[in-house]
Amino acid sequence: MEAAQALGEVTLRADDAPMTEEEATRALGLYDVILPTLGDAFTAAAFAGMPAPRCRLLANFGVGYNHIDVAAARKAGLVVTNTPGAVTEATADIALTLMLMTARRAGEGERMVRAGLWRGWAPTQLLGMHLGGRRLGIVGMGRIGRAIARRAHLGLGMEVSFFNRSPVADAGVPARQVADLAALAADSDVLAIAVPGGPATRHLIDAGILSALPGHAILVNIARGDVIDEAALITALQQGRLAGAGLDVYEFEPRVPDALIGMENVVLLPHLGTNALDVRQSMGHMALANIAAHLEGRPLPNPV
Image (cartoon, rainbow, N blue to C red):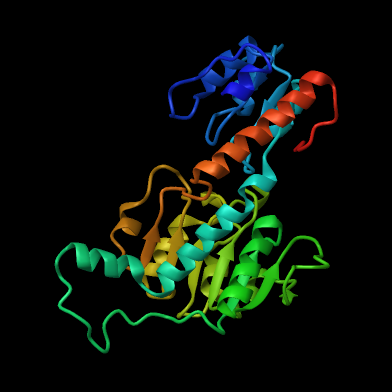
C-alpha cells in the first residue's frame, strides 16, 4: 500500500469478496487505473454499462485473468496486465502438495487421526501410490508446467510427458511432448493441469479425457476450475474409474459440490496456489510496476 500511495491517490476496497458487475462498472467510471483481484467481475456486461470509461488500465493481481473480458476491455480502450513470474514457484509447490497428498492418502490419514480413529500402524492401512518412477502428464507447459516438471523429475524421479498447444523446445528437464491429449492421459499415472483459464480451455478435461486415464491414476488441478468438467469428474470418481483427485480450484468457485466433499479419495484445498505472504507481496509489486509504467508512458512489463 505504501508503494501504491507513492504513485497517486489510492482508494482501498476493504471487502475481500469479489466485485460484482455493478461494482466493476462503477469503478470503470471512477478511477484511472484499477488493480483487480481474482473473481472481480470485469465482464462484457460490466464494460457495456460504462460506454466511456475513465479507466485506462486493469493491472490484474495474479497471472490468471479469466474474470476479465480482455476483448471487451480492449474495445473500451483499456489495457490489461498480469503478474506471471511472481506466482510460478508457489503454484507449482501446491501442485506437488496435491500430488503427494492424493497419492499417499494424506488427507484421509489426517482425518483419521483427528477423529480419534487411528489404532496404530497396520500393514495394509491406507496403502497409496509411491510417486517415484511414475509417469507424470502435464497439460500446459508454460512457466508453471515447467516448474512442476522440474520438481517432479528432479525431486521425485518421475517420468514427464506433456501436452501443449505449441511446440516446446526446452521443458527444463527430460520430457516428451505428446500431440494428443487423450494419449497423454492414457499414459499417465498422474495428470496435472496447468493451462490458463478462459473459453479456449473450458472443459478441456472432459468425460472423454477422464475415461482415457488409467483406473489407478490421479488428477491434479491448480489451473482454473472450469478447465475440468466437474460433473464428469464426479461421475468418474463415483464409478471408481479414477483413483483420486487433488483440487485447488473448482468450476463454480467458491461452491464445492457435496459429492466431492464426501469423497475420501479427493483432496480439496481453498485455492491456495499463491497463498504465501512473500508471493503476494511480489504479485502486488509486479502489478504496481505495470501501473507505474502506464502512468509514465513506458512499455508495460506484463501486458496480456
